[in-house]
Amino acid sequence: MKIRIILFLLFAFLYVSAAFAQKEPPQPTKDDSPPVGLPLPIDDYVAYLIPIGLVLGVCFLGHLENSKSESPADA
Image: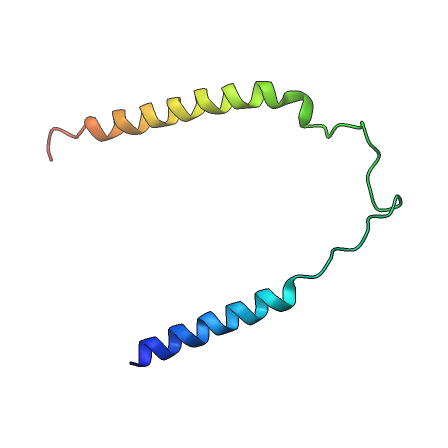
């Protein structure tokens, strides 16, 4: 019974907060927006970063698997 009351209160709180949160966003101004067409420094290298990350991930996983399979002889 106590769980039902808590769930009902949680649902009511979320419903009311969602109802009050739906306001129209403010209109953007030209002063706040960054200049169009200027890329961030990382944008040019995304094509290089993804394959390098995949290769490093495979290397780290391979190293982890090798270290788990090589158990000491005394143990």
